[in-house]
Every structure is written in structure tokens, then in C-alpha cells.
Length: 165
Image (tube, rainbow, N blue to C red):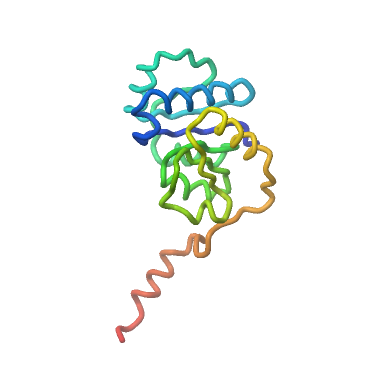
């Protein structure tokens, strides 16, 4: 399946509760929408903040939040994911989809260490440059952290079945 769109999620207060960071992010996404589809399932609080800005966003496809499986399907088919969510950093890493995290730090540093995720400032130019870089990066191999192999349940059962020492 061709990966042709950018998938966006935003909900952290640092990105959506103050007008300026949110404006910078939205203007970058609107710029990007001129050359690539931008799909944005919007968190209810974020939608309210977007409405307060009263921007004329022409190309961003704002939609209602999705259930987990529907969102995961969108993630798997995305060219790049732009997010501030911790869990999505893990999911994109597992699925082999480049992730740009609009935060100064992450509780999932392994995703940055192996190169599947990049921390990006919530500023228009930084976002534009990071998306361009992610779209043009070589993705021939998918890196996954050690033990991210889908076999966790089997390992847990094995541990639980061992006799107590």
C-alpha cells in the first residue's frame, strides 16, 4: 500500500493549551497539506482550542477521534506520523512508520535511539524540515527494539510456569 498521507495526533497541554505552539503546528500542517494529504483525528480538547484560533485551514482533514483498531490501520498506512503521544511512538516503531514527536523529551527513548522516532520542536520551520527529512529518509529496514517481537505473552507464561526457587 502506498504511504501517501501524514497522520497527526495532538493532545498534550504544551502543544494545544497555549495559542502560539498550536498555531505554529497548524500552520506547518496546512503548509504540508499543499503537497500531501494530512489526516488529523482530533481530540475533543484540541478541537476546542483549534476553533478558538479561528485559522483558515484549507487542507488539513480534521475528523472525529477513532477507535484503537481504526487508528492503528491509519497509522500503518501513513507516510509519517506527527504526534505528541507516548503510546503512538511505540506503535509507529513496531509498524515501521517514521514518527515525529512534537515534544522536548520522551518516556520512550529507545524509539529515538534506534531512529524510528525523532523529537521535534513545535515550531513551523522545524516541523516542515523534520517532515521533509522523514519523507526522504531511506526506510529499507525496519528497526525494532530487542524483545519487541510479539512474543511477550509466551515469555510471561514461561516465567510463570517455572517452579519457584
